[in-house]
Length: 478
Image (cartoon, rainbow, N blue to C red; front, side):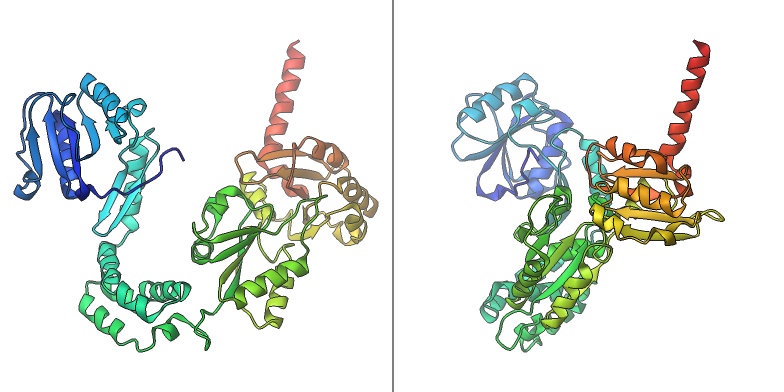
């Protein structure tokens, strides 16, 4: 992020606008709608304000003379639109005295840029692309416009009218935030969004005990809870809507090592983020210590998210954490995530089941060689069974030996899929006999092994076969 979104109070000073034509007129309308006082230097000498309503036109001071020598006292920002070389020179002057400046379509001479804007009164959404693609910003704005309630600004104003009085009635910040969340997400918020503000106001005033409404314990503190959230295999777009809501509501997030930075970016900005995971060969704090952290945070009244790669209940030790939370009397819930096996299957077009060919799926973990040695491979020899192995990279040799000894054919298709759903995802496909060599082709983990005939339907397998055909044709041509 190069440009930090900042909302300026344009009513606190003068905005100096330089330029001419339709470009500058668009800026006049935008600035006037924000209540700005505008000092406009028209580079073509024409101060045409036709088309603007009288109130907006009254905010415009039609200045004369040279803007490069104009008095800048009281000016809070400089804007140039359709100003040509004057805009570049004006940028240098503004920067010299420390004023923020925007030269339209000229990043090199701008210290701030204009976003695409969704305006809902007290709710304003700004969308930026770092100045690289206004068209993309407009497309994003269109999508937000489509889903954002028309009266969302009215809801913000409604809450603003009661904030001071509720602050006095609910001194604890976290409890007060929960109170407003229940208002926004519940029937009162729905009434405002439906245009029935008077009814909403009456309903809010009838809440006799705001703390109880917000979910306070007898001590007056907020009631804590823990939500186990599946982060999926890495792509933040694969988070469920419910997972996103949990991340935005959390006071503290305890996350695994495999949770990607892009997913952590979806956590509420002021929430605490505490890493509790570990990688192979590196020390970790241990599961008992993690359980204690979750329990202590919840009992302190915090909303806790335990953010786990993939799905909490598929080799994520989520069951152990739920048991510990229940035993401690802590309220808890689970938000499922897309497990890495499903992520690999989708990304590399590998069907885990296939009519008449693969009728069963087995998920297993082989974190270390001794884990693989403990597996009863004799129950995994059915050719119509797909085997998905988590954390099996370091035990690849043992996995191959176990399956071959149990009777799986050496030519059984196998895929090694690393960092699935991420931009640097990688795949290596071949046969069970080649499994250790396939692992060596992967730069680094985490990786999923998929073993079974279904791998022959995958995109990497088809590409591999196509490459072999081309290679044979080239050899024949030589």
